[in-house]
Image (tube, rainbow, N blue to C red; front, side):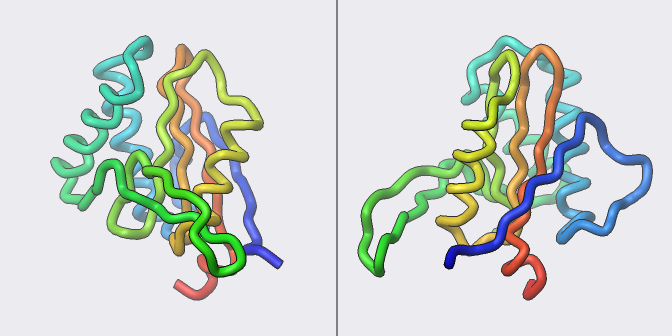
Length: 145
């Protein structure tokens, strides 16, 4: 059986911290996301937002790695690789989109990316016409970290 995962959605930053795993870190990342979104708006390619997020996170004092290679395993054999857009503090996986709206396939893609890592939390951040965020938690890992 694979890792247990759950998804929480939000359109805005809560005024008070909710008891999510790594909520202080994800709150800081979401703040960086809104600063980038407010400065650049929508309409750019994802790579522009990736670079801007990396700069904003660094300016916030957070370590962010771009295009992190992730190996996908099946029955203890490597079956593929992909690159994560950003990994913050070796704890939070960031999947960035620049689309009119997020679809269930984008959530599924991010859940699969989270499964392929040993990370406890992912944020799916969309720089579309309306900012949107989805928080994904690997509950079996989040409870141990």
